[in-house]
Image 1: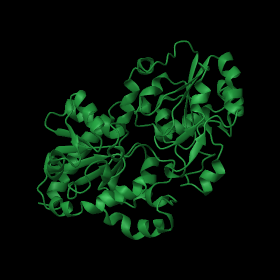
Image 2 (image 1 turned 90 degrees about the vertical axis):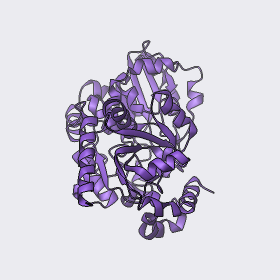
Image 3 (image 1 turned 30 degrees about the horizontal axis):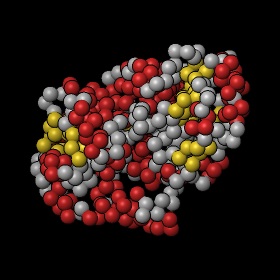
Image 4 (image 1 turned 60 degrees about the vertical axis):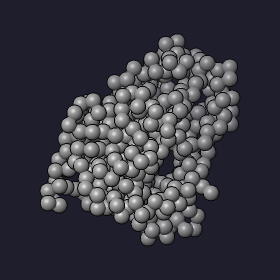
Length: 403
């Protein structure tokens, strides 16, 4: 049985709890946070959680998870955290007004939260098509029927009351993806941009990766394929191995960090005996944005990371060896992939030296400037303050509308 099917079964089993959640009195000052189906302490909600916990004494911030290790981690840094379906997790979910997530109500407790306000902070400006805009086959021939008629009947898949995004571009895409009125999608910047204040060199050094011996650090960050069912040969046969002399000549360290749901192959073999290639896995670096200050060039494909990295106004290379398949057989992308690109678009590792030369000559300077202006204009260090203020006001409006 697939993980998706198991999640559906769990939602059905707990349905009676929704009856209580729908009529339980709610506390405006109790905010519940979660992320990535309850399996990570990361992303926009984690940074907003820390801000509320440390700077908003009138609010009570609680992190819910579906993994005891996540609960332990949050508590170790001084936070309040519980398993979503523990007695305490259920009780708090029945009382809280706001539920802040990165994906869906499944990030927290979708049943006991029923009746509260679900706020989706998302997990990045989307390039990949989402929700109702995406092509999907995760349930086989039943996917279309499920998405069209049944999905939003389940508490974990209900529409959020609000979606908060980073830019006007993200706003347009989320309005379409969720089918929400325009006044329920607001651009405020992303709390996870706070990660740019981290000491990335120290984080890497603690994981045994010393970047001081190199002139440049390149991060290769491919995203998932076929909604987690597809894999990726990172080495592209022997193309990346053939590039090793070039990496050594230019004193370039290549960090590899795949999407949490991407099945990568060939990474371990590349690292054996090659100091120029190192993996920065999700298990050690759950927040990739925290590594960005140490990264000189980002190479990605269809990942939303490019929109966050734009905040640093540094070069971006898109490597899309399977572009036709992704556009036509996978979930698809928003916009025009080639026309909107912030820098050179290449098909394989063998084209990296040429792309590198074009960056050195600033051939793509204007493309990057346009990209930064579209996606990173709200990067001013006050994202958490804006989001908190906005949510406080939404609580008041919600209470007033029901008075």
